[in-house]
Structure formats: C-alpha cells, structure tokens
Image (cartoon, rainbow, N blue to C red; front, side, top):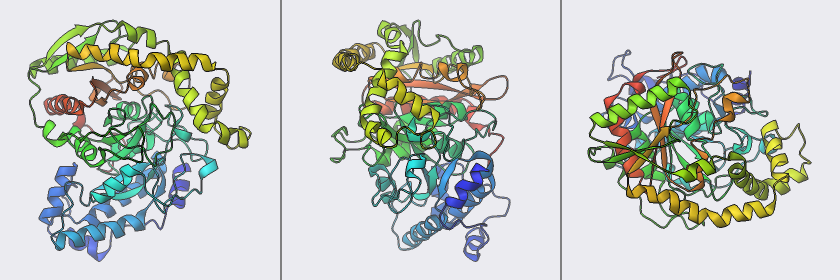
Amino acid sequence: MSGGRALQRGRSFPLCPTSAAHMHARSSSSAGDRPPQSIAEAGAALRAGAWSAEALARYYLEGIRRLNPQLNAFITVTGNEALAAAQERDAELKRGIDRGPLHGIPVVYKDNFDTAGVPTTIGSELFRWRVPDRDATAVARLKAAGAVMLGKTNMNEFAAGLTGTNQAFGDIHNPWNPARSPGGSSGGTGAAVAAGLCLGGLGSDTSGSIRIPASWQGIVGLRPTFGRVSCFGVFPRAPSLDCAGPMARSVADTALLLSAVAGPDPRDPHCLDRPRGDYAAACERSPAGLRLGVIDGYSFHDVDPDVGDAVERALRVFVRLGVAVRTVRLPLLQDLLTVPPLFGFLLAEFAEVFGELYRRANGAPDVFGPIVRADMEFAAGLRRRDYEELRAQRPHHIAEIRAVFEEVDALITPTMPNVAPELATGGEGYRRGRHFNLPFAYVGLPALSMPCGFDREGLPIGLQLVADFLQEETLLTLGAAFEGATDARRQRPLLAWS
C-alpha cells in the first residue's frame, strides 16, 4: 500500500506512545481526556503541565502510524527528529524559555518546502532522494517559533494539478471519503490537518493549491498576498504566482501560523518589505460595519446547487454579524475566466523553470506523471507573444480589480463550484476547479478558504473570501466571526485521529 511505503521511507518512525516519559506527561490528566483541539489549547495545556511537547508529538505520530496507510498523506515521517525537538521544547519551558504560541506545536510541511537533512522530493521520482542542506525560510521561521515538524506531506508531482494524485508516491485520500479527491496540489497537508494528524501545516498556492484542498477537506487555508510570505526554499511552479501559506483547522490557528512565517526576506526577490500585521488580534475584532461584495455574474456562476445554497446561507450569517452585503461588478473577471490564456500564463512560467530538467529526462513517462507531461505539452504549443502580451496587461488588470475595494472590504465566492469528485475520475469533476482560484492568484490578492457547510452526502463545502493587497487581517476578522457563529468546523471526517 502506498501509505505504508511512505512510512517506510520515513526516518526512524516510533511505533507507540508508551514510553515512561509519555505516561508521566499525561499523569495529571485522566486517560479519557481529549487531546488539545487547537494551537491555543495545546499551548495552554503545555504551559499548565497537562501535556508535554513530547507527549503531544507521540500522540500525533501514533495517529500518523494508524491512519496514514489509508490516507497516504505523508511522504516522509520524521518521528525521531520530532521527538528530539519536542524534548528540547520541554527542556526550554522548564528553564523558563517560551518561544511563543507555537512552542512545542506539531506541524507538517508540503514536500516542496526544503528541510535541512530531510528528503524534499517535490512529489517526484526524479528527486526521491534529494536532501537539502538548509531550510526554506518559512520552515526556519516556524522552527524558530518552536514548532515541531512531524513530517513532509504528499502532493501532486511538482505541484502540478488539483487532483491529489501522484505517480511516484501514490495518491492522497480524502479523510471525509477516501474514494474522493483531497484536492491539490497541497492535498497531503490538507489531509493531515483534516484527519487531526497535526495542528497545522504549510502548503503552496500557485492557482489554488492551498484553497482547493482546504475546501474539499473541510479546513481553513490562506493564500496570502503575493510576496507576504517568503518562497525562498520552496520549489517553484510559476514564480510570479507562487505563494506559501498556512493550513489549519481554525481561522485562529491559521492566523498564528501566518504570524510566524510572514515578513520580509532578502533572499526572495518577490518578498515584500512590509511588516506583518497583528493577525491574532484580527481574529478578535468585530466584523460589524465591514462591506462584503457578491460579484454579479461570477460569485455563483456554474456552481452546484448544494454549494450555492451553502454560500447563500453564509451570506445570511454575515448579515446577522453586522456585515453589509452588496453586489459589485467586475466584468474583467469574465474575460479572465477564459482559462486557457490565463492558465497558459502559468504554464509558460512553469516551462521556463522546469523545461531544461524535463528535456534532460526526455519527458519519460516512468519519470514524469501524466499531469506534468500534459502541462509541458500544452506549454510547448504556447506563443511567446501571447505570454508577453498578458504580462504587459497584468498591471492594468490588477488595478482594475483592486478598484472594487473602494466599494467593499472583501469579496465572497465559493472556493470551488463543486464538492470533492471521485479520485479516480478526471474531466468534469476537475474542469471547473480553477474558476474561483486562478484569477485572484493572477492579480496577487490574499484569499481565505474556510468551511461553510456540507452537501447532501456529507462532503465539505468551502467559501472563499478575497481582500485587497496586504489586508489579510480583514479576511481573518470576517472568517473568525463566521466560524464562531456556525458549526461547520465542529464536524469531523470519517478518518480522524483527533
């Protein structure tokens, strides 16, 4: 089984949380006590002595051992390293050293984030044994904040595609229904978070790769403003579109992760020299008085009935919270929805980054999966002139779409027009997938996906909130208020550890 294969690649995976240290750490709580359900709750438990960082790491590693054979969410599990790091965090707390809200918190990283001394495969057979000698900036920042890495998560090969399938390491399975797609390309981080195998993680988003898995797996995912989080050490898909961002089970946890990774980085030429916001405080603010825009002819275009109904109900919740909902017009979005030219823009950059590597391996089917090969074939047919024209028009497109924020503070759409399709099928289940994702990535706006309900089969539905440049705090204020007023987050998938 592919999940088992992933675990065997892991580094000294511990089998059971039965050590004396683990039992001692839980001694102040009854055996029936539930584990912490959020980063804040875990932090409070660590500081109160109800849990230790080591016990927390062992708890989640045991969940990975039990559920990953069914989910295949991980490519590499760093069990021994996680326990060593957790023990260090415990020792620090005993010495009075507290690194902050993420001290001792178990997290995971998509396997396109470089991790020093730990394989980083980018989901590719070509890089199966690639071991970087330094951490990606976002990884280094979470490590400095005290987070404990449990492992590297499965993904679409080279972050190409939204399916969650992978030729080299096996397909990822959705914990709500393993026969359904988890979404991609950050499907492994999404599955690990949704199944309760960690308290949060990082993904990357070029045209929806954080938001799509978040929507289809019932979690929160944030694509920050382009350049808000450094992509140094993250393998590129399309450099002028790529973003790194957090995935978690709540808006507040997402905010804590963003607080740790956001900020300038001179090693990333696209990274903005702007201080990060107070994202945790944003989650405590009232959304009353904020203006939320429904995009005429777009926000509900070609969506499945259950999805449309869920977002309509969400709008009524926002109104009860004091948010002003109004209709806005953005005719440019309809033009950008001619996906082949816009997707061609992405693939032209992908071919620039990846072309030489692909040619040296002769595009071999035993090396590259079908999505990567299809992308490269598509890119080969693009005219350079079309890419240059779209790149020249891009500043005007950005200005035109940003102008809507004179009327509203945020926009709302479904994240996806449909719930997770069957994993084994292609075509229609994925065809509309970038409808609400790629245009906002193209203009570099921050976007938050969060659960807003379920379809008649019990599969999660996500809504997307989009704000102006550097206005992540607005998204977090709206998202946290909505989350607190609904119960969508309180349901757990079929395959869940915590």
